[in-house]
Amino acid sequence: TPDFRSYFLIRIKLARTVNEIHGDLLSTFPDSCPGLSTLQRWHTEFDKGVFALEKKTRPGRPRETRTEENVARVKRLVEDNPRMTTRQVAAEASDGGSRAPKPPQRAPNKTQRVKCCQDLLKLFQDHGEDFLGSHLLVQDESWFYWDSAAEASLGEPTGPDSEEDDDSDGVHLQAEAADRNTMIVPDLKKDKIQLKDCLLMWDNARPHTAKEFLTRRDVEPVKQSPYSPDLNLCDRFLFRKLKHLLREDEFGGHEEATLALYDQLWKLRGHCHDVIAVGGDYVY
Image (cartoon, rainbow, N blue to C red):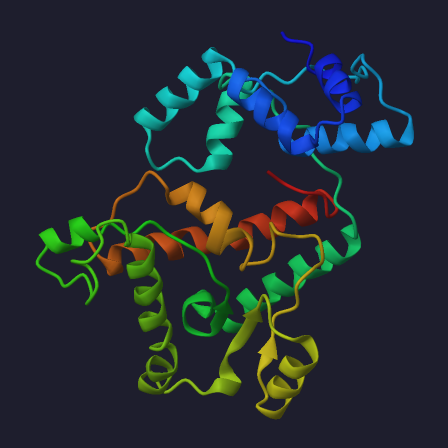
């Protein structure tokens, strides 16, 4: 490896600027030269009189992110599953796919978590088995993969902009999600469900404004426990947890997807019993 620090020190003493030094290194060692920000940091250390020719040793395992082995591994992962997220690719590539299980975390506010589970179980008891599907409104946002090509093969329209860009699946999805969210209130009116009969779980609402709005309309908010993504529907069941459970499934239409969604939501009651049994700790 070239001694970049020594070269930098010599060129600085010859009154060369940082940009000039970086340009020389980039033209000679395009794949391995230090970045401009690194050279700027070295220049600051030089001005302060703390610049050292030898690199400071740091504890821990050295970084090996750009090895040929890692590049080939990432390429294989993406080719095998083009829908993998960057987080999944990083996890698989960093440990070769053989990751040791993390030790279970200790849950803070365990008393509040137990109380939250008891309240949720009481909702099941008071409102019946179908309260999740007919009385509970949950608001949050997320992204799901929408295959516009598959939809077009079924003879359904893909949206006004579908012919302009084949890579705009995410835009189609956002529009689709927005269209379906606007159907919430008409559906409530059609089923003759009053707003005061609904239970509301809202992940990102302004607390004071939302509280005033709900109080005026006699809407009962579902209490959430802090640091408890496994209990909050917005965090656990509608998003990361639910995506993991359903990611290998394919559905022929919205009805099949809705039924699969509800099948997983019903598991909330069993999870609450498990959390209470362990005194509020996290249950995996």
